[in-house]
Image (cartoon, rainbow, N blue to C red; front, side, top):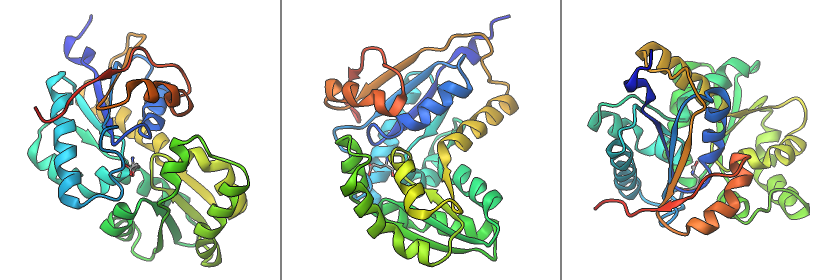
Length: 270
Ligand code: DGL
């Protein structure tokens, strides 16, 4: 029997294109689910903006998705998850999952020496969301945070490997390596694209945590628990952006791993 409530889409939003790495994992794990993706490309990056601005943008994105009748919202942006998710959860009653908590859980499971590194945007590191949650989950943990502000623009330009990327990552990561971290959280949607070079710089003994996978697991568990899982497919993916749909479409393939249908431009906050 078709349950119409379950056929409603899952809303996924990010400051721009990076959240497609999370959408890709969701699509892989839950191919029957319909997904609506919203990238706020007009206002990206969020990672260098004030808390007040990120809160406002996040609420506008969530309301846009709710107007499209989504059954759940996945905040596929580390900066929004770190800075604005608790407030969003207070304001809206739809099930909502961010990417910080799944990353924390995966890191706690992986670490053997309780020394965990987190790399993320300046706003995420300044919020201390990862540091706080890791220490709550693992009181003995020593957490080292490092912001890597140049990685987002480089990923957007498609520069994810080569000499300059290796040198930059060496600069960003050497202190974490010296601290003996055995687990490194990639706390930004764009960083999984640098996984290969980050792995080379950190060495084989360090586990890289990409929260996209664990987020998809948590979404599945929540849908099951709430009786909202869609079991017949295939699901459709629809993408909206707030600016530059063509540019988004060009870069999207690298993040999503497959072409998206027609990308539509929308205005938020009307
Ligand atoms: N999506 C953001 C994050 O995961 C990175 C891009 C931005 O700064 O807006 O933190």
